[in-house]
Length: 413
Image (cartoon, one colour):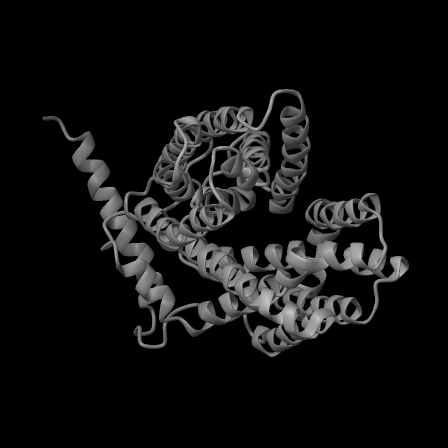
């Protein structure tokens, strides 16, 4: 990809409207479903169904983007569908209608962040800007969107949030079309990319590291505030502790993470993130003293943001451009989405049976990730059963196919 003047502002806008859209729609969705007449069981069903369809929709959209060499187009289309499907939540009451709306919206939004990353990573190298800058802007926009959602709800009501979210996703669709195109696949069978990656031991190890460390947040996300309030902490204190974690995430994305990643390398950064997780959850298991909580909440910048930066660098360096969108959506679906879902399902029984001891299980998950990071920064993700040299040939075949397709389009008729 050639350097594009003004690429950074374009990506900043894309990430801002993308994560603002998430912030406007995601946190208050259960409350909106309840207001539209669903019982708690039905709310859970709609949310679970959405999670299930994300596991399919994300990788499928990524593979289509690679197959058609159309990362921008697929992202823009998914963003437009996200906006339209958000409005379906206002179409009526009842389980059937809202379940359909939830499925449509989950399927449309699932590929958005991975496809944006697949476009941003090569552009950051070509145009010499830090990927962490745009991703940090996204996290800040999510906070702003969530705060705005609270104000909008107080003034107008929950029904205004799907409209606000739809406007943000429509803005994303328009902003995406101004992005530089990434080198993606064309002419490769639609099942080839995912199969190649899932036969790669190194890719699966990277997914496992992310799954263990990101999944370890499940007990905290579900039960930390409950535990804090049971220990006598005020809602205001709990809110500040939660905000501190998000602020640490933004700080690492924007300021601390890039130089730390350059110094440690991606494998070292992954190991540091896993060790920080083991420390964070060990302390959480032992105490709810406010000074200790302030210290470990700051570690969220390492356990989430630094891990994400390191994983993105590994994928950007080692996955052929022909499979970039496929790799991003598989990583996001398996390493983040599925892992978080399974860990959240396990969090309830763990906390119910062990109480604060459930955090020891999460600390153990992070510790188990440390041995898996060795060599991830330097190993090729090529499957072992693929003959030597054929991994790079994926790109050559794609480029040749894309050139032929372009020639056919330009030939006089």
